Image (tube, rainbow, N blue to C red):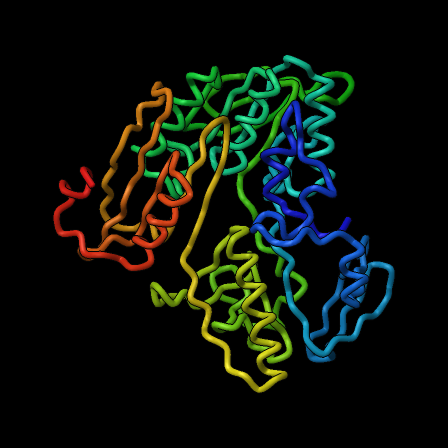
Length: 385
């Protein structure tokens, strides 16, 4: 299938009515760009080679080899392999290979989950993990009238980004929707029925949950194994410069796999998000074209950006979530129209900003705050602004 917008899989693809389907969400509709159907590639003279897995990369020889034994030569290579999901079977969790235990990464995964939702009407679903996938799929399964429980080991959801104050709102909102939240424990085993379908989830704290469907979202892993030992690596990714060029001059790396200089904070970082995936790819192409034409290109100057949507909620975050935090607005999960946010303050400057329920203009405003990093000596004053 031609490249598509992966974020749709955990959101509109799972709606009971008016669900998103291809060709509706081929790239680049997610960023408001043109929808690139398979014909577009032909028109532009781009050869789109589908259903072909590359199993070997020989960077010194500028060569790739497919599973079918085909050889591809290149002058410039862009590594855009992204991430793969971490599976419970990777850790040898007992019974984790049962049927109806799902991971969400590809459109095939989403199709299988949609089938299971139809087959297990009004059944019980257990979500393992309290990150993006957990929260978005918890909402999607609830909208499909399943009885949903969420299980995660951390003291609150989305711990890599949310403060306890932000998380308390979402946990309260989900609880009001009838989702059961079980924190501080993990799934240690699954039992299945005579058809091999999952029926119970065993938790480390001894509890047992009934389950017709299990969805696991416990993180991803950048797909860099093909290039091991051939390019310089850093913090789990392939090290690049501000133009996404790797230690091998003919090879670039973009998206989840790239560890790049984050100019705003003067540090090397790897970012797993669709916004950076799009923008890093654009930067690499600009740099490649610039080299061809002998034109200089500005260094990548990225403002980290994350967002999510579930139920009637939508939040955006810009910047860095380090330092002291200030919560402002109405974060009561019972409110008919909750709207609240948070600032992160480090060294007397606002470095990060989060907003739930913001308008497009308000979201642009918090992005500007995170980029410009205004002084903020008085935290109490900030809560009222």
